[in-house]
Amino acid sequence: MGRLLLPVIVAALVAAVFAGPAGAQNAPAPASAAKTAPAAPGQWPSIKGLKPYSDDTNGMSLSGFLRFLTFQQTGRWISNDDADRVVKQQLSK
Image 1 (spheres, helix red, strand yellow):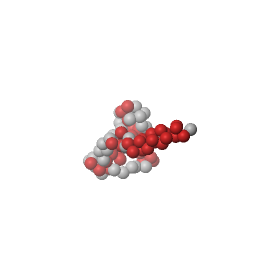
Image 2 (cartoon, helix red, strand yellow):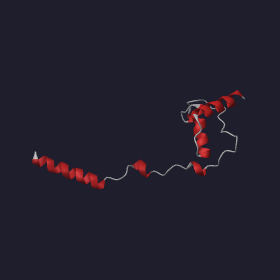
Image 3 (cartoon, one colour):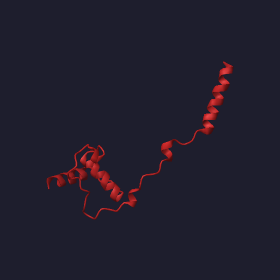
Image 4 (tube, one colour):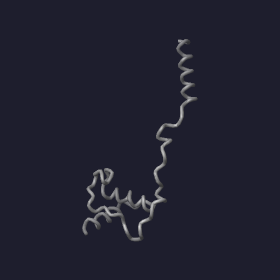
C-alpha cells in the first residue's frame, strides 16, 4: 500500500503545479456590446422574414433573438413582454 501511495501523491503534485487555465479561458473575449452602434431612438432591430429556432436566429425564438439583437446594440436587455409586443407589431405589418 505504501509503495502505491507515493506515486499517486507525486502525480497529484505534478498535476497541481503544471495545471493551467483551460483553453476556453484563453480565448479572446467577444466584442463588447458597448462597441456596437446603438439603435436610433424608437427603432428596433428587424426580425421580419426570419424563422424562429432557425440558423438565422441562432436557434432562438423571434422574441429571444430580438432581445439579443437589442442587447448587442444598446448593452441593455429588454423585457420578454416588450420583445413579444415588438415581434407582434413587426409581424403584423
